Length: 288
Ligand code: SF4
Image 1 (cartoon, rainbow, N blue to C red):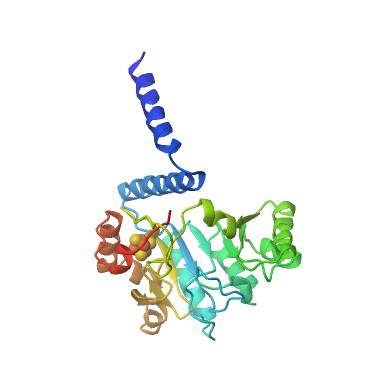
Image 2 (cartoon, protein in one colour; image 1 turned 90 degrees about the vertical axis):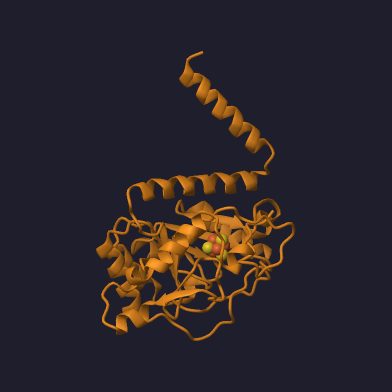
């Protein structure tokens, strides 16, 4: 057998052995982490420092209170539109091409400015996928069509606890009707897929603690302008900076100022390597 054939057979056997012992949900998670590791490694080799994706919470409202979501209560915090545009302008000037999603710990469709905001994203960041994550409570066909027209490339709808059968059917009907809409059932997925404990805030059975973390490569801007450590910091335990304060100080690169702050860059490097000095990271689990 040729050496290259022997090598690929050996890799194939090792992968089969690894994935044979995992549930489908765990295998999917494992494959996604490997993919992220590869992307991160290739990107590091090119010395690029942009985030993989940027999630911008435009307000602080949600239509639900799910037991597995440690979001703060609704309040009137709204990200000012000029600040939203300043972040997008900064990313455009930087050549960012990753995913943009208009959410944090909120329901993005509760923000009536969304079509206008996302049209601006699509104009400034024409290479970025724009993906709306939603619980679907406020979704209608006109909303899907209007947002698609302004540049939204995908909708990820999630079915949550407390949903009635007609609500669930309505979401699946969107998924069948529109190619760009996909639906996940959190109630089902959590039985088979790894579940996040949100940095230790949610108690889950048999937590699996991380050895490395690439979620820290997804940037999160909260509705008050705070850039927080990661998507698993809903209560803003680790704020790296505030884009509003940077703009007020005269910066035209408010997001980059924070993302490229040497102390934040160094912290992300240590987190990638599994050096979890922060308690939130030591408690962080991707479930069982
Ligand atoms: S390990 Fe730390 S940086 Fe990574 S997702 Fe968990 S809390 Fe966030």
